[in-house]
Length: 174
Image (tube, rainbow, N blue to C red; front, side, top):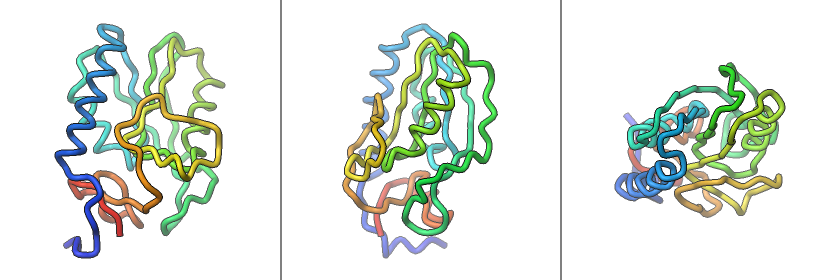
């Protein structure tokens, strides 16, 4: 059983869903009836990716990749580990990368560079549930994000601490 007594709520479940609804409206207007390849970065973005996908109205193909820049603990290693980055042919496709949080920017830069190096996409956009701009170490920004957040270590709604707390329906900090 998860001990949530040590977690302070940062974003409630209803706040998260409202932010995702607003983002989905923007994406539905941008892509309209064009096919979209949504690349969800596991494990952290799975909750966000699924809730976002349920609200998208264009023809959608979902792909999942697994990257990591955290070892155990609360700080990024700065090194991106490509655990599984198998992707279909994305040439001439609209691609939306879906991530849980952009903080140092290393993972976002690695993935956008990887796609730009290996494919000639029609469009490539980066979307994050959370944007922690105060921690940015590389020059990259999300094209879309739901919430700009403070410099706190956040857990819940896919975000974890040593693989725990992902299943919380809200985002909190310890």
